[in-house]
Image 1 (tube, rainbow, N blue to C red):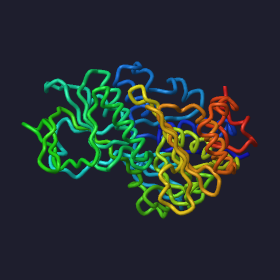
Image 2 (image 1 turned 120 degrees about the horizontal axis):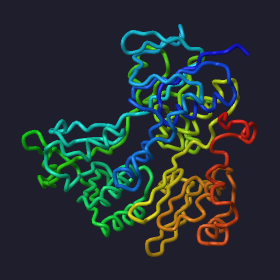
Image 3 (image 1 turned 60 degrees about the vertical axis):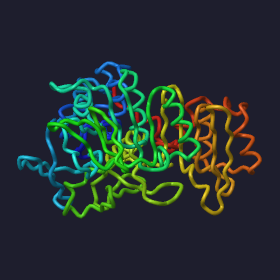
Image 4 (image 1 turned 90 degrees about the vertical axis):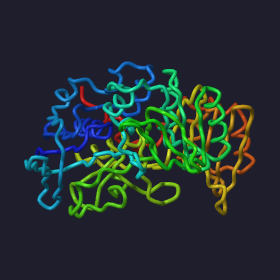
Length: 436
């Protein structure tokens, strides 16, 4: 096999797992990893744990410094790609250098959305995506101590951050514009249970609440003004209202972009030799057939491995592309998968059980599971995922028994449902471990 030059744009989980998958198939070709970051293999999902003091800073990096040597990969830090030409198979880097490739992976991730609010440029307004963002949130720089923080957005990232910062005895307020928290994932019942639990732990949570202005004094944040003119005081405002795929550098490249880079189940774009994976992409939701930007850690790692495997000549597909989120919020475990808010659609059956802090709900379509919400009691989540991915069909009565019974929850090893079919088909699965 003629050696190739593989280029990976991005050093997050998607890019790292892609390199390892390439090396599992191809020991000879050259690999260059280009990233605008000052370090590589940083885990954004661990940032909130570090900020809350639960883990040391070393835990933010999920590969050691020897990784690049082990993978025989050239890593170029602080280097941005400004354009991609799929016809000449060349990248132009910041500074004008041109880098040629045989196959390239776009793994540039996404950038947090910033709201167009008056005062948004005030010192103390931040997003959370990088270590630098986390340091900005926690640091003082001669200003007042961080006593109160307002988080704009009640999605999983905002809720996790609120819980971890609360562990530092910081006053927390989460303000969500929608009528419920995690609007794309939770129903109203799940939202209210989470809201009540967070309130018990001193976290103020408000839904149906719109922020109209960031207030400041001498350029530093002092609070936020709400619709109706009410004011909430704080020294930090953190925007957690979603992300936008980093696709600006693809302008004029002829690579198809529909909000994110459009890929098929092999992580291929519309141009030969160009792959994309992770937060920068959109692909077909396996349940709704609509386009989905699946911006989660698990999707990024799995898609990166599929992309790398196929770039190196393999033939694998990323299957079961649907939303999957889990968290521990102030001691309340929650998990949601698929489309648990479908009860307003025709042909949908919903079954739910509630007891105290526990709420378990499944959503069925034609006798098959297409989504679930588990709050408090999340046992059996892997089993439900396995049933959903395999498209197992039961009668409604049988599904009700499954939801309410504890006997089924030990039928499978705890993690089997999470691994089943999510990454690769059974073929070649044993061959994808990174080289030693």
